[in-house]
Image 1 (cartoon, rainbow, N blue to C red):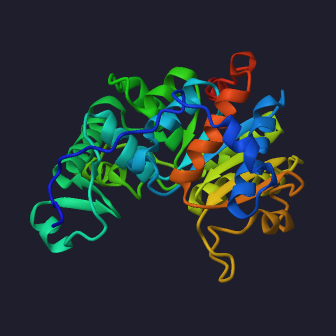
Image 2: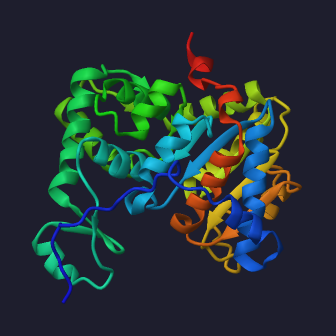
Length: 335
């Protein structure tokens, strides 16, 4: 019998507690996804060891709800990414959600959704959350916007940086990024509890409210590319974050700046390529658009909660992260 209650919480993966080096080395001469994982491990290691390269992490999908929340926070803590582009759901509905003390629960993909609806339990495949807890996030954003932000225009980076300053939980990627000066861009921030909270804020303050400017996001991320030049992409899933990060090469050229294509790119995905739906193109295809140099790319076709912990743990155990320069890219935007 399927349990439709909120009992056992999802445990988040800790990449500091194990070492996959021997396993990955064994994958060198295998085939299929195993060899893709091996190649991705080597590419990510190269990205982190290249002195002047900026690593941009993109996050789409529900990996944080499924056990990767601490993993992303540790990537920032241990200096393994320099900037993040993510969906609003990844940052607000999952990360901030747990940062405020809420939990994701182990459920079942075979649950009766009518029973879940009756009990205000929302399902993410085989993971459950309390809808009342999610509404707490809506209300938190509304209060934060109304009482701590002021009536001005923000990029999502500015808004989330201020949110990171305001948080006091110590259990959030948003707060970790604030502490380490790692910018987060959410070009579709309104597609999340943040959108609902800001809708409430604007409705309650019709004559004086904050506004999120998504074009300012594009301008800021493009400026980052122009200033730093050398970039590599580590993409979990696809969608808006992937395409937004890739597009900054084209965007820079459109405003008169010649910049190199992204020199490295890794994508973890389960999307199919045959119908053009591989979350805004394969990496080889992106090369035809002038976005990605396909000499150092790797598509990994596998579910990300399985592949991501291997690739990131390999880098954690095989790169001298303490010697890697912290970029502190928020400083680019401080006048």
